Length: 332
Length: 170
Image: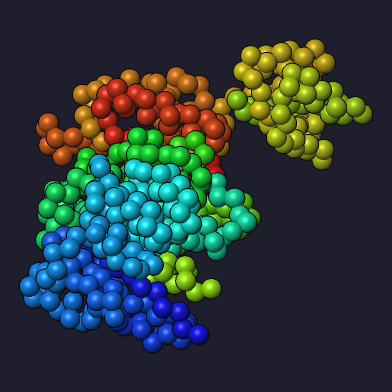
């Protein structure tokens, strides 16, 4: 029997568009599972398109590409969440780590209106985790956020579901592809940080203002989400000790290499601390992945160490994590 | 601290137990006993090698106690470094008194800086160094690195330490 789930996509940047593409590509597969995801509204920061019979996602994507806007309706994302009848909000607005941004309000309003939320938006979860969880529980709605940590790489659901029954004692990994790219390239080219940052910016791996990535803030936010969701902590950004990669020199990388190490920006959680810092990783250790890859090693009491690696960013890759959350909510 | 000791026993029954009793009396933790019964020293005694963990203040008590029992002590080596660690430092390493940085580790008594590689690209540019630290145990290595991090903080140096699983803390 086919189950129809009406959803809105709030935020139509790289990730929101990735979700639209993935829904088009996977339509048959989803139908085989008995799931009909019907997008009834798509909103970007200025416009929206609403159609209760289902928005034509091909049209929405090409309009966004050609005109820079998704539709002609002047209705805001939050109004869609409040006023339009649907079950699921896919929240993919840009992240704001200081205030939580539009995303925080969107999620809270979604719960109050009885709507489930699947999101890739780190900011709200990093700063108001417990409030979001409580509000969602109170309204009997569901909140899933695999895409906030490690992009396509499964970490949260791996730890919470697949490894259920294990106690997790420690998580260590690389959670920021930009830093990994810069450090990998510095080592390969024996080049200074500034030069490889410029290269990363040129290739679109780093933002014009790279602070958020290179100072370890992005990694810290992901650790807060991990700490809260899989360690049951009640942590905020202030609980994380953070050092970034801006002081790393090519000479230091060479010295490390001579001793058999690579340098990586490592995020680490255990029962006593949450920490982001550049660390020495033995060259053949599973955490020593190159390029812009992410990696996480989860230390468990029964299964021992479990290590996963994958792409930490990208439109389709992040949409993959969102889709898996959507399916896991509605499949049963 | 960890102590390795070569002792010599008379070839009569009950000597080994006599030699081990003081270690246990002074709350030492015996790591290994190698009893070379087939061998003889030129003095006709049997060489035995003991390795144990002990609080530093109790070592002399053990030694006296062994001597009182007539057991010969051929060698005592207090420093056995079983753990080897590496860290990288970045910053104005030389100008912030590198000797002092190294001394602080060496003065712990349980860890030592055994190797230093320094790279100074240009005057006034931050330099980089790799330090190898030997320590008596894993815990000692962890705490030596912790001490190093505290000095580094005061001197505004960045410390890059090995990942946790490398330190064996997991």
